[in-house]
Amino acid sequence: MKPIVILISGSGSNMEAIVATARRERWEATLGAQVAAVISNRPGAAGLARAAELGVPAEALDHKAFASREAFDAELIARIDAYRPALVVLAGFMRILTPAFVAHYEGRLVNIHPSLLPAFPGLDTHRRAIEAGCRVAGATVHRVTAELDHGPILEQAAVPVLANDTPEALAARVLAQEHVIYPRAVANLLQNM
Ligand code: NHR
Ligand code: GAR
Image 1 (cartoon, rainbow, N blue to C red):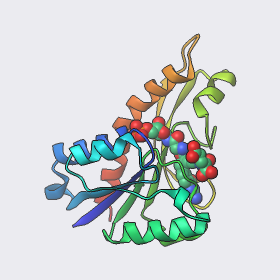
Image 2: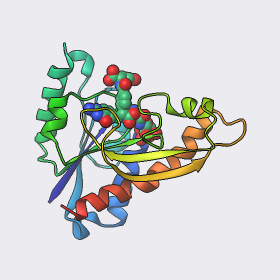
Image 3: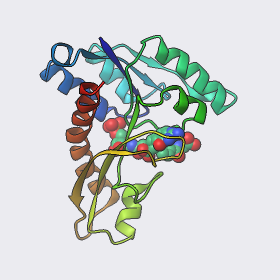
Image 4: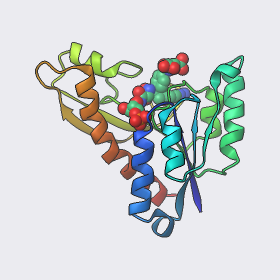
């Protein structure tokens, strides 16, 4: 079995899309893979309740309880490794990870970022794309490296930016595409490992 651990901070809609696709496509039988756990750095994240409703073990690890990024990441590694993951999936996870964390999961750590990388790494991507006058925006699934939002690209989807778009409207349009490409990228990775 190839366990998948999903890290979230918020609503968990990408997490839910991956769990739903895994069930619909019967990943246990076809890929020998299963979503083993969901971990949030925010105890109040709506995605934790969503995971529990889906019957997936859900845990919180509050980064505010730690004195440093290094200390938080060390405990996060311990929590994740209890599931012996083949793949660790960042799905709206909002904490920058230390080089030690990234090195520990080299080759099995991926992220989805809500822009067409290498454009607009970091936060507030939708507002920045609108202000730059972009006619297209989108999302990128990439391998995670120590340099934020700079790892090798695995999958992208583009959407139009409309006249008078708002960051919220654009985010929703991008998110719908994330739910298509992220489960597909995860399945492709599992297939090849
Ligand atoms: N860590 C590394 N080392 N490399 C990446 O590519 C990472 C990463 C951790 C998260 C997701 C990323 C995104 O897709 C991601 C990619 C958080 C921030 C951030 O500035 C930036 C990018 C991403 C996630 N976080 C603040 C911090 O100080 C906190 C912001 C908050 O809590 O709201 O960690 O966009
Ligand atoms: C998604 O749009 C994801 O790409 C983005 O946050 C949203 C999470 O939604 N990620 C980042 O901005 C990472 N910094 P979800 O919790 O419903 O999957």
